Image (tube, rainbow, N blue to C red):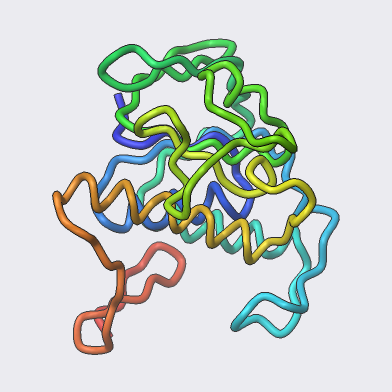
Length: 195
């Protein structure tokens, strides 16, 4: 059992996992390493002058690992179903129960179809600004919700929006993940610096 199951390990999925794990929700990421980032070089990601896609993914994976995400590298999800109390995420070797699911599988919308998520006229998964689908507690992010507007910053923002909505539901009020210098912590290679 996990609070949040994230399917996909690109910018959207890792962003969602970072926010939920940082804020105390047990988070599992299923990642086949199929992200388009391996073909990318980022010059337009805020705060980063220039970084190769492989390096970006490596740094982001380290961030989620530092916050205790259960990252199941190489674990392909073959199905997601709603079970009344949450979701069952199925891989070739296991089933994992989750309260929430975040679909971050790029343009592959097959898992959203399995859940019977509503789609738009152009075939993308229909979501609101919080990234929640027509299926309660199921979120879709990145390329699966956009016809052709695929970009790393947008995908990461979609993942963050999904995570903040999950956190708001869990806390029972609008939640803001905003650290300030007086109480912020920074992680460096697994070490927490109470700076």
